[in-house]
Structure formats: C-alpha cells, structure tokens
Length: 146
Image 1 (tube, rainbow, N blue to C red):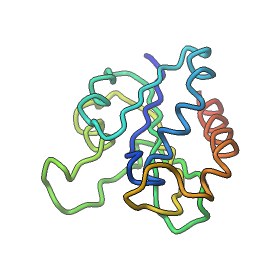
Image 2: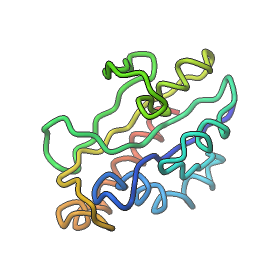
Image 3: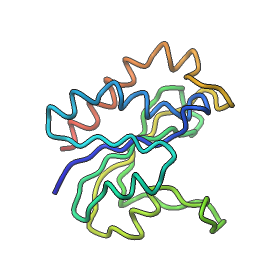
C-alpha cells in the first residue's frame, strides 16, 4: 500500500485550481514523509494511472457547499456518491472512476471551499490571502489520518 495525495482542478478557472496551489506548497513536506504527490489537474487519465489497487489516496479538490471560503471539508471515499445524472465522458470525476475501477483503494476527499469560479488565472483575493493557513490545515488533515 502506498499513500498518495492527488490534486485535481483547473488553474485557469480561478479558485477551481486551489488544490493544485495547495499541493505545490505541501509537495516537499509530503515527499519527506514518503507520501506520493500527483498534480492531476484536469487530466483524469493521468490521475487514474497513478493509482494502484490497495493505495490509500487523498484527493484534494475545490468544492462549493456554501460555507466560508477556504473552509475544509473531509469526506471518506467510502461515503462519496456521484450526484450527477448525466453519463458522458465528461460527467465523471476521478473519484467516480476510482470507486468504479479500484475497489481496494481507500482514502479521503479533502474539499476546499471556493470564493469565486471564473475564467481567470490565479486564486481569488480571499483564498490567495489565506493560502498558507489553508495549506497548513490540509496538511493537518492528511497527517492526522495516516
């Protein structure tokens, strides 16, 4: 079993790229702990190809639950459910594919609440100003669960 952290999101869509920014900040600390780091961005094929059955995986992604921007929500992969009703190649997330093809993979989804999603490179002011705190909190969530 290997422990891996996979960041997904789109850095060209403002806060949708927050997971990539956070994982880039945490990369060295995680590697020192023998935790694999995968910057998956929007490439589902690449993200999935880095997973093996039996791995323990943390997915970091932007979420919108209507809470405070930068707030972190942690969900077990076991409890994750696909909510969309469409079934096209673009209707699935990397978490959906993991649940479908990797039955022995365990882990968590770490969601970071967004403030703004728009066609813009870089984070919103509120997430940018708090990125160090957000990264620290994500690191705590990961290390407390391994």
